Image 1: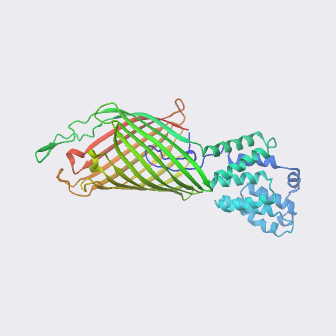
Image 2: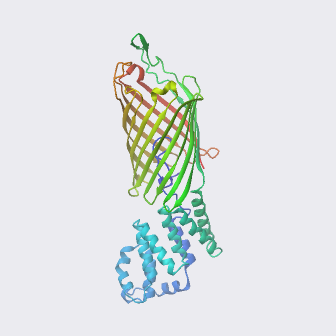
Length: 472
């Protein structure tokens, strides 16, 4: 079962958030260390090791002390290193490269990746064929998202050390090359599913009728239940520029096919593209957006705008995400009263309690301007939940509340409309039980909307469904 350091883009895209964490290596850090050290051992190391005894550090020769320091580096015992390194540095024949390596490893431990990269490069300038240092440098470059530089190092290692390193280490290097090359390939998601909605028409089930100026209306006396088919597909590609900078292009389509005529067929097509910055703990996007919608195969609206999104990893437990988006929406003449601007924003925080349990919370809002103030509104809300990974499945639970305040009294409704909406989202994902390479999931969503325009806009709605998702 996947654990959180293998969940890289979402607290489930279909419901809530976006965030990324590094993919796991084929070899663990300790396994890699053993493989590399095994390949790099030479006779002199063995000679020094045999000579080590219980003599005090100050009485050891420089070679013995250097070997002890190297051994302590592998154990990450920097307290012990700090106690003896001054002795080593004060010796006129000390290895400056080893001292730099100690400082670089300490920088890696403290997540000072830029400093570590600088030190690794200094070592390789004087000793260019040190496999362990080259691998460490590539690892540090991946942490700061310099993928092209890391790829170049792995490709160079594969060529220069061909036939001279273990099969397992060779396979590890090949896997890293594939992972890094894939970052610039087209990537995508396909999701197919079906759901059953117990209130397709959002009926209030209220027998009362509202009449105004000789016209009468209600929502619908009885809710109508029925099924829907739905699909989602997306494609994205990264175009590297230099260092942490890149361009990104994304496009996709979302659709709903109702099984009953009480609801309409809906199709959304979107295209986004723009600038992206990545480093060890920050991701920043700024991109224009275009979205077109069709209802029952007829053009419904066009949205043009832009989006700014950022993600910041405070530490290994806490991640913060922010998002602001603007759209200018235009409709055909028949629906032109909906023309206007829409602003959407959100702030989200996630907290990793342990490798299998994460909690999250967010605040969000929207400001929609239409042709009439009685149709324009301000919305704000909050949600919270958790994601639990078990051996059987991944469980997502989220609850939320949003309030929508319309800006002016509506003469037709004879009320200034205000809606209160509470909702629940839940989903079970079965990562281990793929069906024809698709990952199955089942979900249940429920909401209650209470409006001051009660007869028309108050309703309860529940939906249960299944999805099959494939990423490539």
